[in-house]
Image (cartoon, rainbow, N blue to C red; front, side, top):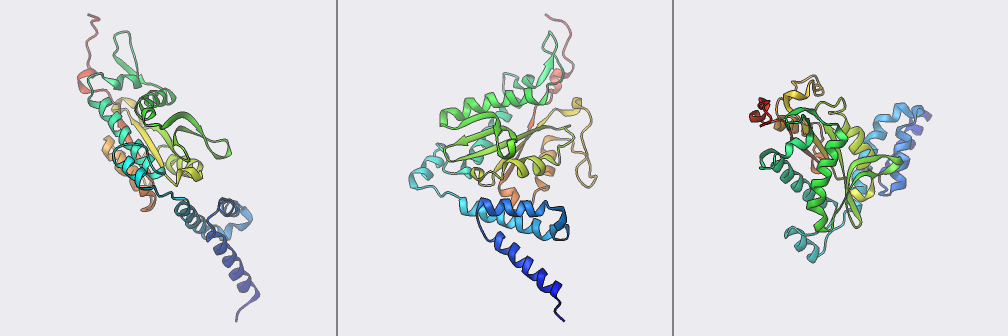
Length: 273
């Protein structure tokens, strides 16, 4: 027998599917509001799935294909043609900055440490100070390409990403954490994805940066599922990437920057001469 409750359930499900098929910000807001309504808790799973599918639909609808000139410019390391290009360009420069920090002859890793009067590392600097050092390096690299780089970039609901990289019509948020931060494993989803990547101008793209300070940083939070705590930057980067779904891995980039003290500096002599 088909009951009245069953008919009502089918009607509600059909209305949710109609919302999920609309690629507008209003539809996104409506689904998010429904998903957060405690009175609709029995529908939470279905609403969450519909919200995820609708967000993907919005990103596809908002994707901007570059013309021939823009594509050629992008391939020649020039201006990005869309948010995906901007994210890839920014990630490449982040990798170059990371390489210079680790292997450059200017010992840039010291920018991320408090040091004594003899420039010997004492302890890691605060997260915002580390952010500012990275921000300065990114500005030097991206501003000549016409890409704007700002700290504390504004997003929906008054939220601010650590860094906002932008080009006319699109942008990419960067969220930053130290490797011992208590929200290390959750911030990708609770901050970067939930607060910043939802901006239409991002096309769903964002970058998660983690500063790795090595053994001198202290306790690191265990990954989800109580797995082993990572012991290297590469291992941490791999584990963080595995927390993302297959689709999210195409849009959310992970970059772990090794700012740990080199072994040659651990036992630096105390003689100021």
